[in-house]
Image 1: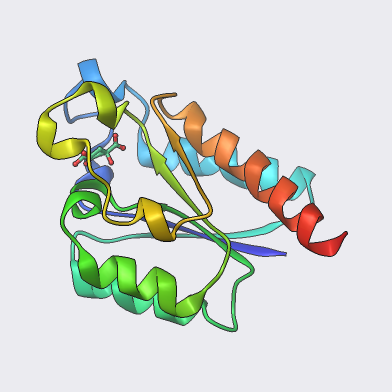
Image 2: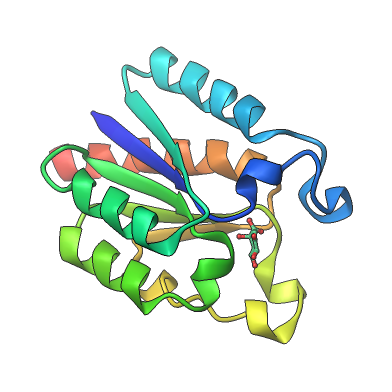
Length: 147
Ligand code: DQA
């Protein structure tokens, strides 16, 4: 089973940006933990980060026929990107949306997710641990598909 983890704009700045909101962990550390969980559970995992909307759309499209599921934190594009939403719809793969912070407890403009309605499920507000929850959730989704 192959999972692609897609990280949107400014997530490469984790550990530096707004630590009071996102915590001290760097993206590489989050990915290292996910990789370890994946290897313990016979999952293949690929990581991708981009600050560019079109590159994220391209990556989602590449998942078609290549991956079994997507874990995505579209970051600020969550709230604006019809293109990312359409790409998720187009590939029609199990997709879990992750947000490190609780987007519902922040500014008004963060409350709406363009992509949530086309995702299988969402994990918000657990900090970096949310990525681990998404991996566990993906395993569950895959088991349900197989059953
Ligand atoms: C975020 C929440 C977004 O509103 C914000 O633009 C981000 C990170 C999160 O993980 O909490 O860049 O997606």
